[in-house]
Amino acid sequence: MFEELSRKLDGVLKRLRGQGKISEANVAETLRDVRRVLLDADVNYKVARQFVDDVTRRAVGQDVLQSVTPGQQIIKIIYDELVRLLGTANVGITFSPMPPTVIMVAGLQGSGKTTFCAKLANHLKGQGRFPLLAAADVHRPAAIDQLETLGTQIAVPVFARRGSDAVTVAREAVDHARQSARDVVIIDTAGRLHVDEDMMREAEAIKGAVTPHEILFVVDAMTGQDAVNTAQAFHTRLHIDGAVLTKMDGDARGGAALSLRGTVGIPIKFFSTGEKPDALDRFHPERLASRILGMGDIVTLVEKAQEQIDDQKAVQLEQKLRKAQFTLEDFLDQLQEVKKMGPLQQVLGMLPGMNRLPENVTVDEHALVRIEAMIRSMTAAERRKPQILNGSRRRRIALGSGCTVQDVNRLIKQYEQMQRMMKTLGKGGRMGRMAKGMHFHQ
Image (cartoon, rainbow, N blue to C red; front, side):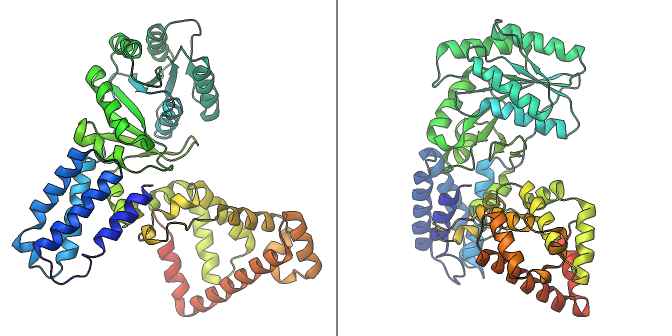
């Protein structure tokens, strides 16, 4: 997420880190480079200029320049201004005290609007709500089919009326929600490849018919400054309550995220990083600012772990680690738990310092697939006691998993090294202390 922007900013700011003395000239030169990096990321030029002016005003002062750690203080100022630029705090959905809450979703075709509707429904369902999806994109039959397919996947009902106009579908969906005790209606509206008058009139008519409590604008994060211009056009006609950034796992340069609040004046409420129904996160400005500056996002990482990792399994793992009884079967279980948290590249991206890795370094997801295949090709006895794996057994495992005998040997060697390490740590209670640190209690 914003790897290129993060890497370039880190390259500019590293000249300030650890310096005992900084002059106004140093600060001015560094911030000129920061402005250039922001413009390269397709940030609105007025936003980039204002950002640098605000940082300069706070940074060029006697308290900062003469402090013990001026470089770190300036980076802290840049972090604070990034948070302010992104919106200061998370802004959630405004729910109606009298259900159903009506959420209208707008955006251009291809922005991921229909998929977002399903993700939002899945997200709200996880919070104990009972959403209804409304297929009001009547101009594109595939959109109705797509929403119905997604609704089936997440077990959320979809209201559709083929042959009806969008306004009728939206109005009847709200009525149906009242009758069927659905407390949220998410209306998927039609999009075009560009902003046009017909689309806007229809969106205004839907808004007039159902009076939505929230209007969310979905924008492709990879479109940069164009996304801001489109958002402005929609906001002028519809008065949008919040934006949603999709495809954040793609080659997003950061322009849309860093420009939306400053130019359009609307908060970013959610962002998505994949196609799966659970690939949706609430937008926390302070966490994204931390990631952009290479500080990681440990809070989100812990939250994902708490959501996905079974507490009982975590306790059992802790006990096995204490006694150095961790088997390949346990390792397979842990692989499954980690996979639930999302693509490994994204999970690792939440760790501090990942922006300093070389640009061409990527995580080999297939390596985990190969490890899983090898362990699954073993019998239960072999997983529990790998020491019984002789040459013929290893050849059978290699053949069954589509790997080589060398791959199997490497896996067993790594496992044995890990076992030796756990036995060493287990002496004197060190493993117990480490295991406690590994388990997050809610």
